[in-house]
Every structure is written in C-alpha cells, then in structure tokens.
Image (cartoon, rainbow, N blue to C red; front, side, top):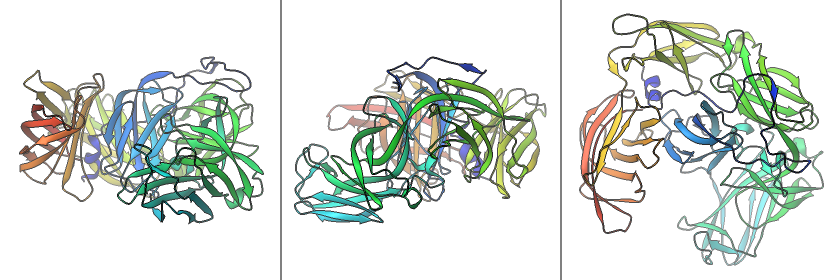
Amino acid sequence: MKLFQKLLSALALITLFFSACQREIKNDLPPGTEPGIVVNASPVNANLTGVILDESGTPMPGALVKAGGQTMVTNDKGLFRFNNIQLDKYNSVVKVEKAGYFQAIRTFSAVANNTNFVRIKLITKNEIDNFVSTAGGTITLGGSTITIPGNSVVLKSNNQPYMGTVRVFAANIDPTQNDIGEIIPGSFQATDANNYRVLLKSYGMMAVELEGAGGEPLQIATGKKATLKMAIPSSLQSSAPATIPLWYMNETDGLWKEEGSATKVGNVYQGEVSHFSFWNCDISNNAVFLEMTLITNEGPLPYTTVKITRVSNGSSSMGYTDSLGHVSGFVFNNEPLLLQVLDNCQSVIYSQNIGPFTATTNLGNITVDLPAVNELQVTGTATNCNNQPIANGKAYIYFEDVLFVAPVQAGSFSLHMTRCANSTGLVEVVVEDLDTDQQSAPIVAAASTGVFNTGNIQACGTSSVTFINYAIDGGAEYVINSSVAGDSISAYNQGSQNYFDINGFKVSQPNINIWFGFTGNSIGSFPISMRSVNQYDSIVVVTPLNVNVTTFGAPGQFIEGNFNGQFKEGAASTQHTINCTFRVRRF
C-alpha cells in the first residue's frame, strides 16, 4: 500500500521531449552554411521529470540529478522532478551522478511550459585493471584495449605529474543493443568540425576514466596520447568503413564533438586520443528538426518511447512523448524514415514510414493504432471530504516505473497508456483535491490489458501541503511551500539505510534553496548534515547542531521537525546562524 505514496512527493510526473500543434513548416532554426545547420541556443521554461535505472532496469534511489541549474535526488523508485526550470528547445542537458556508476548525460529537445520526460540507464563503473604510472600499461576489455604510455598521466585538478598506481575504469557500449536510447551518453546528436548539428551512426563506443590509488581523478598529460582499440559489434563489421571519425562527449553541452579519426584493424577501430571521456566511432549525417503529436482514439499517447530510423543504413534517433503526446527532435535530413513506437520493454508496437524532410516540419497529429495487448486505460471517480465530486484535482498513477498525472474534472479521471505485452503489473493511484489540499490513501491493484477502474476514491484525511521555512542570521524567513507554483520539496531514504536527505528550492529565485540530511528513523534528536543553503554550498556545521524530529510518518506520510544552530562556509571563520522548520513527505 505504500509504494505509490512514496512517489507523490516528487509529485506530478509527466513527460518529455517535444512540441506540436498544427501541421506547418517553421524556419526558426538559424540557416547556417549549406549543407549543414548551425543550431543556436533557444531557452524555454519548462518542467522535467524522469526515472533513473541501472543497466538491468532496476530503479535507482539516491541518484543526484542536475538540470537547468538545479539539483535533485531520486526517490526510492528512481523518480525525480524539476518545476519551471530553464531548458532549451533544441539542446537541453540533464546529468546524473551515482557512486559506482559513470556520470550519465542526456540531451533532448524541451517543450516550453510543459513537463518533459527522460528515462536514463546508468553504466556500472567497474575497475578493469591498473598499472604503474611510470611504466604505462595496456588494459583489455572484451575485444577492446586501452594503451597508455609511461609518464603520461597527470592529476586532473592541476595537471601535475602523477606518480603511483593508475586505476582504469572502463566499459564497452554496444550501439546496437535494444535499449541504447536509454544508455547512450548525450544522444546521437553531435556537432562536427564545422560546428554543424549532425546525427551519428555509431560503430562502437567506450567509457574510460582514470583514478589514482586514493581516488584522485587523473587525465592524459598535455602533448601525450593514449591508443584506443574499440570493438566493432559483430552485426556492423561487414559495413564498417576503413577509416572513421572519432567523437568525444562534451560534458558541458551533452553533444558529441569530432576529434581525430580511427582506422579499422580486423574487428576493432584503432585511434589515438588526448584525453579520456566517452569516445565514439561514427559516421555523421545532416539533421533536420521534426515535431509530431501521437494520439489514439481515446486521446493523447503520453510518456511513450519514439524511435525514428534512417531506412538506408539503420541509424536512428529516439525521444519520448510528453503528457499531451508531443514529441520532437532532430532526424536525418532528406532521407526516408521509419517511425516506430515502443513499449517500456523496447518492443515495437506501431510503425509507419515518414519523410523525407528537408526543412523543420510539424506533422501534426498521428493516430497510433495500438495492439490490444499493449493498451491499458485507468479510470475512476473522485470525491472530497463532503462526498462531493472533486472539481479541481489530480490523479497520480504509477505503472511500469513511470508516474503519470491525470486531471480530475467533474469528479472523474481517465488515462490511456502503453504497456509491455502480456504482463500483469501493479497500478497505484492517489487522488489529490487541489482546492482543499487533501489527498486519498493509495489504491493498489494488479492490472493487465484493457480498462482498470479504481472505483470511487475519496481525497480526504491527509493534508498534501509540505514546506521548509528557514531564516539565516536572523533575517527575513525564506518560505518554500508545495502549494506555491515553482517550489519543489523532496525527502528520500537511501535504500535500506536510515539516512534521509531533504531538499527544497524556489525555481523563480535560484538562491533560495536548502539541502540537509540526518540519520534516524523515529521521533527524536539527530546530528544534522548540511549540504547547502542559499548561496552557501560548502557548509561546515558548527557542532553540536541537531535536528529535532517531531513527527516521523510511514513511507508516503510526513516527517516534521526543526533545527537551529551555526554553520561556516568552507574554511571561512565567519559563523552564520540558521533556524528552520519543515514538513516533508517521506519517500
């Protein structure tokens, strides 16, 4: 019964990638110099939500997610949400950090004033081997190798020579695997040597990082190079060209950048690189911007994977629809294309030939006829504490690792979605009355295909308001409140541990934010860990500083408490006082 309520404090997840409206041709991309296009920044304000998974598809709690200048942590179902942050119509970037995994980077096209969605799988960061820095070494990973000459490694922080054991972390990334759209660093978008936006067809990619014996980040010294031999997937070996450009992932903008080339030697590509990052062997193709809206006879098709493939060579790009079925992004210029709609198990459930396109195009509505085994409709009615139909509310529906939000109007709600074929999963539903700030207990039941009717759900008995109020140095109180548009609050438990991280921020005023945590699982007093507050982001707590927990609810319920004390910014000697009260929903 608790699964869904945990998700609700990330509140209202709905989703991603793209724009829409009526069929039209737009010319809002800078023209550039033929035959390519140069894409300039196009900022938009929007929401972003998503789910973070490991390579097996298991949700990842406690992952640090960064987007639009804000930071959030995932709950125990791997979910996160940002409200009203600045993204970009053509090139939004989200980054994810989690101990034991390579940093994940994802780029996508964002819809203004809407909730965008990403689904990201993290790549395990395994130590493959090590060598002595003065001697150098060759590390083997499957069919790939990494060769680093002696005396060529420096500390990444200051470029000073590093002497000692070099630990090598690496992973092969197979561009032909079914879930590559969820794993690939960035996307298949790139900027070539002429700064044109292009799409890539990959013939192999790798992640490589170096660390010292103490975990210090290392890098290749200026003027030195390492040799990479990247394995070519077996299905691509016969078509792989003799030479191919090399591309590295630019961690700032999330785009692949062209740098150098590689030569085919047997079943690998061999090339030299001057730094370590994600590296990719690719052929590039000119790009054009495409928009569409996917609908069914029952309405928009939300939160659904869309894959568009170049018919001539199988290279593809991927994205996700938002809550209204919009999807957009870059596709291959002047090429016949195959549009495919996938379920969450990466199976094709609809396909249609489209294109070719030579200019920015909006296809308008595309009606998708889903197989019966891939359809699920969740419906129900909702009443308030007076047993009257709710006029203004939301139904939060969790299914197959995604939290959907459906409006409650005139006391009823309905949501139509895709699902993995021939499977039965749990559907969890909570209804909130926005006029009274009351919510229901969760409804949890098994559902397969067809229509799942929850019956009537009464949104009554639990306040849905959360807040974090605090003051620094006796100044005016800062108020972060879940009932205020653009305020975001979350509290999550790190797996089976008793450590709770609590954070909140005001999107409209980026310097109003707070992040703290404590170890405890009951009412009581516990030492606090302060991460950041407003402009102070390197906090040292002046002990003792304890949080007083006055209410400690079950998962999905609330943690309430307060604290007051002193802190310093980093090594500074100046002390600051802080007073805080809070009520947050426990994941």
